[in-house]
Length: 149
Image (cartoon, rainbow, N blue to C red; front, side):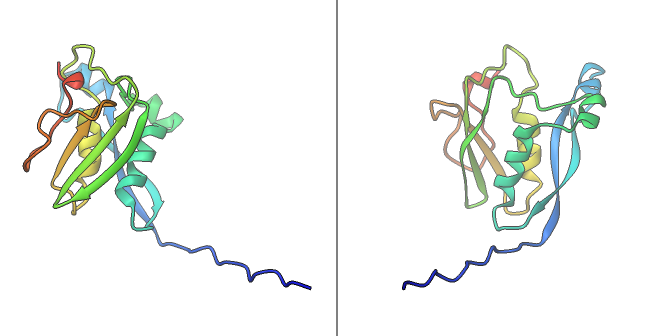
C-alpha cells in the first residue's frame, strides 16, 4: 500500500512594519505638502516586501484611515501585474485604465513614496496598462503620459 508523502512545512517569516503612503485629501485640499501620509502595516518579511507594500496600497486604507481623509487615489488603476527591481530602479506595471483626469496629484505620488521608503529602491518607473512610461531608461522617476496633468 502506498504511503502518503510527508507533510510540507509552511515557512514562517518575521513580521515587519512597513509604511504605506496614501493620499491625504484634507492636506491636498488645503494645499499643505506633503500630500501623502504614511500608515503602518505589519507584513511578513518573505523577501518581497516592496511587492507586498504595493498589494497593501491597492487594498486601500482601513475604515479609520479613510475616515481621517486618507485615500488610495487610484486614478482608474486597478492594481499591478508586475514589479521588478534592478539597479535601484523599481518598475511597476499598472493595470486598468489609469488616467489623471487632468489632476496634478495622482496615484504616482503615494506609490512612489511607498516604494522609495525601501533602501534598495532609488527610482520608480510607473508603466500604464499598455506598458508605456515617460522615461523608461536612465536613473530617474517616470510616469506614463496617462498620469500627466
